[in-house]
Image (cartoon, rainbow, N blue to C red):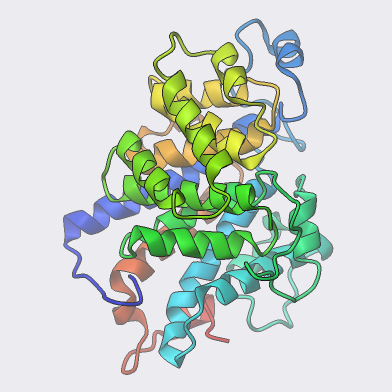
Length: 371
């Protein structure tokens, strides 16, 4: 839970929370996989290859159907970093941005190395998953920002002109910290985004996304969660482009039948605020998760980014059982995503039973080392 307090969770609350955590992470991965096969294509090219309605199912990417990209890889390492931050509280070291940064450095190592380095004792279990050691269109700003061990901060951010969606797409896990107050979730997402993306629209888009997921994970409506994000953004310098994009998305909902033309009126998705706005729009107008995701990937922009953000929103809103089973069955790394989601839910609801001043589960500390 938060740094301030730990709540007592009932069994039903734990089950609902785990379903939403699984939904957000699996939904984001499905959206990533659905968009991966058409991410470099224009809408015209997508229609030429897949028919006038565009892509309606998983298509091969990176040698297989259901393959994910660096979007999902980075999201998983965000979760890993947040769990490690909770575990390290026992040592008196409480600075989640540092632990998330260390997790991102472990991801960066997967982009350089051929496979896990068994000599590193601080890797934990996620960095030993061999399937993650693949290079899948990582944003340049992420590679550059994590190219050395210096952590970017708001005062000295990495890549101050980077405004793409590279930080946005990995930020859903911050919203799953349901024991935190929304303003703390917002601040953490901002600080972690600035580690690779120093432009205000990039880190404020990431923060808005995290706050929206936070509301959904607490059982609130999507519209209400967006309104809370807008209220928090209003106090942040440089918020106007993100605020305008979200308000445009809300306004577009009322303009008629959803489709590619409506999405194009919101933006191309190349910038973080446009990608977030497109995802919010698709999540609001989608008849179900499948329809919302199809809307999110059939456009000119980076389909894996808009697909992933839309999937995370809808997954957090509806839970894992609403996700399309056929797409889940082919998702690359599904066992890893589920295992990490369940570990996150267990840490957040039952952490004191796993580690603390008088309790230390050797298995848990081997998975998530304090070092």
